[in-house]
Length: 141
Image (tube, rainbow, N blue to C red; front, side, top):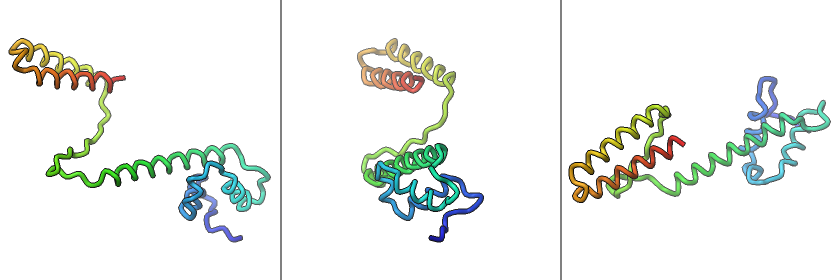
């Protein structure tokens, strides 16, 4: 069998990625025996599959399954439009713990100021500020 996937500079994951694209059902299978057999056929000098090849295949399948789940979730949610009351997707940024601590302190100050102004009249705003502070604390870990 001629192998189109083998090249001297191709990575292990690149090798398996081509095979999994050709046959996506192998991604769903728990057993990797078919893939190991194919690898051994394409690498005649090897008698058994090395550990690094097994690990690379496991990592690749995990990555591809995760991507498939994310795409499926995005597809199921559909395009969100602000006219339907849906929120725009938020972009996640890496924020330092120091910045989050400062943000928590500023929210605490806003909470204290709102309570000082009119605790009863600003009850909803105070609730929202508490929620925001709690989310910042959770994000800090």
